[in-house]
Length: 223
Image (cartoon, rainbow, N blue to C red; front, side):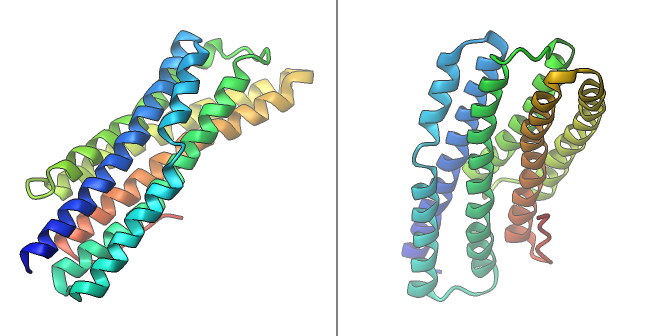
């Protein structure tokens, strides 16, 4: 492909990497807010994602323009298709982080006893952060990235995520049964934590897309 095409692809990867980086920063601030019981971290988290939708749309527009201008084929076409699908996954992850941030902050002031769950919530959160950081590193060095190894690493984090969530789900269901007036709040907490569980699935989707972009094969996406 022409140098102009290579420059365009580098720019698109940079935009995707920047979007992942903003999601990571937002997620890190939410975790700090939960650990330190500091609203300032929750508030800062929101600022990183305030332009998420418009940034994702800009990436899509650049990808579509690249299709129109260069008519890519084979490997180049695979990369653009993967990147186009990736922006949707990142948009949905960012939206989940925003909702998780808001709801977690609300739960922490409503009187629910989360003491027994705190270590597990932190570990659940870290699995999604780890997976996103692996993805960011791959996007930052796409030519050197071993996408098969990336996929394996992200799958390990997603497996941990599922195991931790299953344990917490059982604990919360027990609390729902015995907590009386607070049972509704515990149902809401379960829904909030499910945002992190679904984020783990979406990081696997992104890793699969990067693998497809580099190696080919079939695109396998979990809804």
